[in-house]
Image: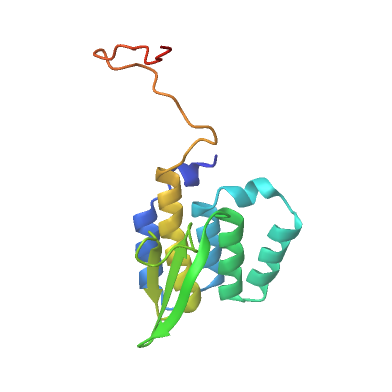
Length: 155
C-alpha cells in the first residue's frame, strides 16, 4: 500500500472536489493517486487502459464511471439527475431496494464528473471503514455468564 493511500483523507478530498469549478487532468490524477488502491495493482489491463484513454480524451464523466467500476465494483450508480443547476448523483450497494430502504451515498455539484467523484469519494470512505472479511468471523471469547445447555428432548 502506498504512503499516500494510508494517509488518504476523504474529508479533504471531498472539500477539494466541492471547491473545484471543473474537472482537470491534474485533479483526476491526484484522485487516482490518493484514493485508489486497486488501479496500481491492476497493471496495464484492458480496463485500466480504457480509463487512461478516457482521461487523455478528457471524457471526465466516463472516466469517473470507469474509475468507480474499477475501484468499487460492488457499488453502482443509483441515480443521476440534473436539477436547479446541479448534478445530483447517488451510489448504492443495493440498487434494487426501494429508496426508503437503501443507504445510498449522495453528492451534488454543477460539474457532472465532480458530482460523480464526490459520491465515489464518500463511498470509498465508507468501504474503507466498513471493510468486511469474505468469511464471517466468530467471537473469540464467550460471555463469562454463558453456560451451554443441552436442549434435545428424546422422550
